Length: 30
Image (cartoon, rainbow, N blue to C red; front, side, top):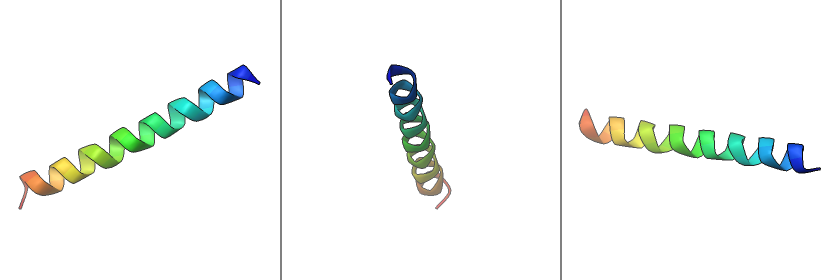
């Protein structure tokens, strides 16, 4: 249903943002 879809989308967005932040952090600390 809609709630599950929204929950999944939010989880994917969170994971994606976290991975992006991790990559930027690695780049910054080289």
